[in-house]
Image 1 (spheres, rainbow, N blue to C red):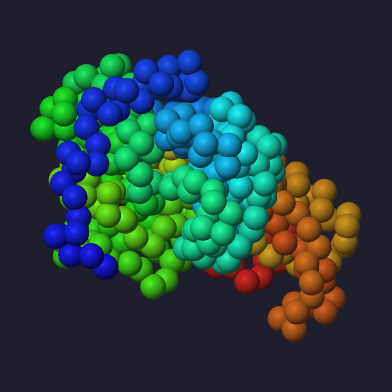
Image 2: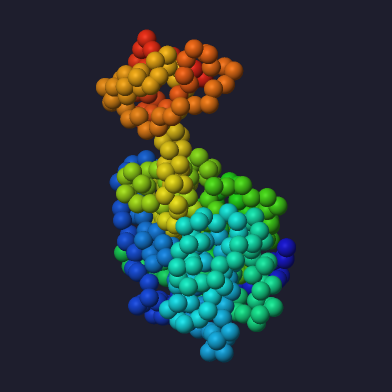
Length: 419
């Protein structure tokens, strides 16, 4: 990876004037997304006030349309006629596809195999040709560059592009317009385009505003790069947050991040599921795990915001509903509000009525019930059944399980009531 001599100064990449120009270009194209306060999250993290910048409510379901349109709107006519190609884990794909539709530019998008089906379908819905290539983003990225070279297409980079960075920075302008006294702003980092743009705006407004990047533990490349003062690339990525599953910063984003980002923290996949769950339950908003990362940092205590006015950028909401249901169930488990148990019934299926009645009378919810595959550990004279129970907490669920265990027709196996 390049040393610091090969990296430009942040001012050579993006300035406040660049972002303001992008803002004018995007004025009638993108939504001005809500900045909603969350008392629940503020109470949990000790902040005086927490605002959520809801870019999951943006066109295409994420902030990416901002940078993609700003870059593509400035392409010369001969380049537009040839078309563009991009690589993306999903959100940049939709941004480029919609920008192409609005500007009359043919688009080809290369996505990795981890890209959710909902994002692929949405990208095709905007008229793009979608090519699936490779298990991770880096593979899709390399193939997109090959297509650009082979067919004379313009490559629209998802983050390492000055015009893309300026477009993403318009999120920061909107935050400052509604919360000029903000102390700390948290932003997810994948390749670093969003935080580079937002950081450019915030630091131009007030150097004392703290800009904090958030990455999943399984894709935490930014902090090692900043510590070494050179770009470090991960050899392996392992995270549920596919939208920020990048392996490295690149030259332009590294240049801006090292000058305009104060800190980078990491959160676990478990933290991400909790944040996704509480955003759905308390903020009534559907968010993908990449977009939930700043909230995960607040809830997990990864960053100290005691007494501060905080803004967390919720960067996207493009997630399959079945996946979202699984994520929120996992989040409830982390919060000790959901438990899976294996029951052994001796009066199948009539004893299911007693199970349902017991759970209901205990004030819990019987979320899942299904006959399980028999194992050697199951009593041969009883039918194994898997159930999922939702309740208010660990103590509540233990009480309900104890009531189930007291039923004559039911025994509980494979789970300790002290867990």
